[in-house]
Image 1: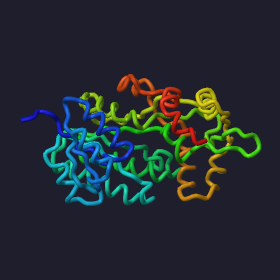
Image 2: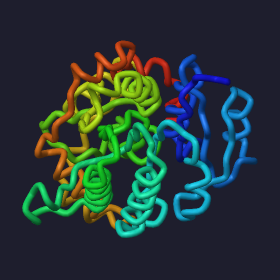
Image 3: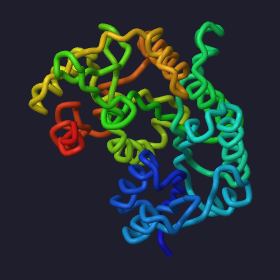
Image 4: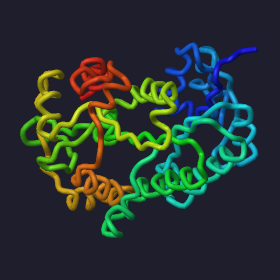
Length: 299
C-alpha cells in the first residue's frame, strides 16, 4: 500500500491549481487527486496522463467535494471570485470546504487566500475579492483546521492578459496602465506557486497556522517598464494612471481592481526572502519575461 500523502487540488485545470498539481506530481511523497468540474477537458486529461487521479468536483456541490476529500491527507484550495463577481458565493464555497475538511480530519489545507481589507482598514476600503478570501481564512482557523494561507501578489502573467501593454497612438511606445505611481508593487509568476506549496506541505509544523505573503520581486511601474524595454526590444512607458482614472475605465470589475491597487499602495506584507527560501528558483520579472517573450510577439 502506498505511503504517499494524497493531496486534493481544487481548480486543478486553472493557473494556480494546475501549477500546484504539476509540482506535486513531480514529488515522490505525494499523490494528486485533481478536482475539476470537467475531467474530460484537455488540461484535465493531461494531468491524468502525468499521473493524477481525476475526480469531478464543483466547489458549489458539497456531495462532490466530500467525495473528493474523503481519504485524503490534505488539500489545496483556490476559489474564483471573477467567475461570478460575488463575494458571498466565494465565502460560501470556501466555508463549505472548510466544514468538510474539519469533518473528514484533513491534516493540512493550503488555501490561496488574501487579506480581509475591509476589516484591516476599519471599513475604509472594500476589496471584495480580497475580503471574501480573508473571511474564509478566518473561518478555517476558527474551526481548528490545520491551514496555511498563501497570498499571491500581482501575477507577472497579467501583463499578457488583463494588463497587456497598449500601443500609444502618438509616440509608438507601449503603455503600462497599472495605477501604482512610484510605489513598488510585488509580483510573481503564478507558475511558481506549485513548488512553494510543495515546500509548505513538506514543512507542515513550521507553516500550519501561518499566512504567507508571496513575492518574487518588488518593482515600480517605471522599473517594470525598463525591464520590458530591455528584454523585448520595444519601448514601454508608465501610463501614469491613478486608481481614480482606472476606476473610470468602465469595464466590469474596474472599481474592484481600482480598490485592489489602493490596497497595494498601502504596501501589504509580501515576503521576498521567505518566498525565495520556499522556492529558491522562483523567477524574477526579467527571468520570467525572457522565458515568455513569445507571449509578447503580437504587440
